[in-house]
Every structure is written in structure tokens, then in C-alpha cells.
Amino acid sequence: MFRYALYKIAIFITRRLSLRASLKFAEALSDLQYFFSRKDRKTVYANLQEILKKEEVSFETREVFRHFGRYLVEFFRMEPCVNKEFIQEHVVVRNEHYIKDVLQKGRGGIFLTAHIGNWELGAAVLSLLGYPITVVALPHKHPKINDFFNRQRRIKGLDVVATDKAIDKCTDALQRNEFIAVAGERAFGAKGEWIDFLGRQVLIPNGPALFAMKTGAFIIPSFLIRQGNGQFEFFIDKPIDPQTVQGNTTKEKKQNIMKQYVVCMENMIQQYPSQWLMFREYGTE
Image (cartoon, rainbow, N blue to C red; front, side, top):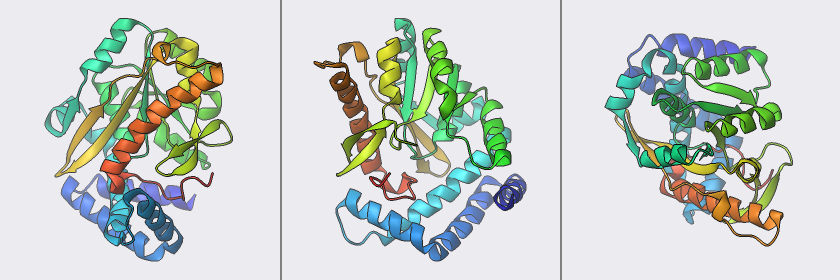
């Protein structure tokens, strides 16, 4: 209840300030979190040392906290502020033709992202561009917070399904030649495969690969990255066609599909490490 109250206060404040003022407000709170959350600070620092292969990463660590604050402001303001005009003015979409190509194939698509940039805003942008999307989301342990987050998503045209109820609904969406969206760098629970990821063995979700193999759907790596001054670039990578991925066994084929989308996530995180909002030591799930 306390965290829900904080969210409500933050929403009230950020929706009454300009975007610039809201981001300054978030930056100040993020700096407080950086200084007082010693455990999170140490974890992020260690993650960045591994990714960047250098000892001193204080600046980058502080930026992770600030990017998290920016992400929340953008999410809280999404209902009144994010529309087609916002996309035209603030978002550059790279390689949208890949999405249109997938639609023409008739097998559906799986937008595969990570907790980098603003993945929530990315899903909303895709929906506003006219692509029907079912978002797979881990339910928050606080029901009111979970309801708020899902309302923010649904008001932008997104369908939302909890991770533990996703199989049937996502399969149906893909078979209708629609899209699902999932974050692919962190497994919740034991359902995944241990794969080398950013220099460590990490339990990576196998859901995207399983859906692709079951339905023939393409996996489309997609990342909405903040570029400063309220601008974003939406990177759409070349889709992975599960029907062309080789493997002597079903398990081997699944792992080979996963390795392909892991490389896409690694590349993006290595380019924008301070926008990867990972506050737990990756590889320790």
C-alpha cells in the first residue's frame, strides 16, 4: 500500500509539471535512491563492470538510476501524452518494414525486447502504429499496483496477459497473425535455459523460442532507446524465422533460436549499458 501511495503521488506531481520539470524531479529522486540504496548501487556497479570490462563505472551506475526515474516519468505520463502526434515528433522507427514483412507471411510475430530504454513505451508505440499486441507481463505482488500498470497498458490498446496464463492466449494471438511482446533477458521461475549472456551463464526465458516453434511465428528483436532531449529511436532487428533454424533435436533447435535472440539483446545492452535497468546481479537467478 505504501508503494502504491508513492506511485499515486508521483503520478499526481509528474502530470502537473512539464516534461522537463518532471524529468528533473525524477532525476533528483533517482540521485537519492542512488546514494541511499547501497545494495542496489553495488549490484548495478558489479553488473556494469562485467559488461564494460573496466573497474571504474560510477558515472554509468548513477545513470542507470537516473534512467529508471526517466522511465517511470514516461510511463506515468503515457496516458495523457503518448499518441500518434507524440510518435511523429519524438520517435524514429528503424526498419518498420520488417514488421510488415512478417504480417505478409501470416504466421504472427513475437516482439522480443529487454528491460532497456523504455520497453513499456515501446509496446504502446507499436500499438498506436496499428499492430495488435498481447503483452506478457509478470503480475506485481501488490494488486493495486498491478491494476494500475495494466490500466496504463490497456488504455493504449494493448492486451495484457499474466506470465502464468500466457500460453493459450498468446498462441491464439499468433495463430490470428497478430503479435505478442515479451522481455527476454530474465527468467521468472525455473522455465528457461542456461545460456552464456554478457560473459555469464544466465537463465534465459525459453518462452519466445517455444511459441515460435509451436506456431511458426517470427521473433522480432525490438528496443526503444532514449536518445536525449525527449527523443527515442525504435530499433527493429531482422526477424528470426524458426523454420530456418537448424537443430538435430527439438532441444537443440530451441537453444539455437534462443542464442540468436540473446545476441540481439547483448548487442543492444553493450551499446546502451546505462539504459539496462537491471537491479539484481544477472546470472544469479
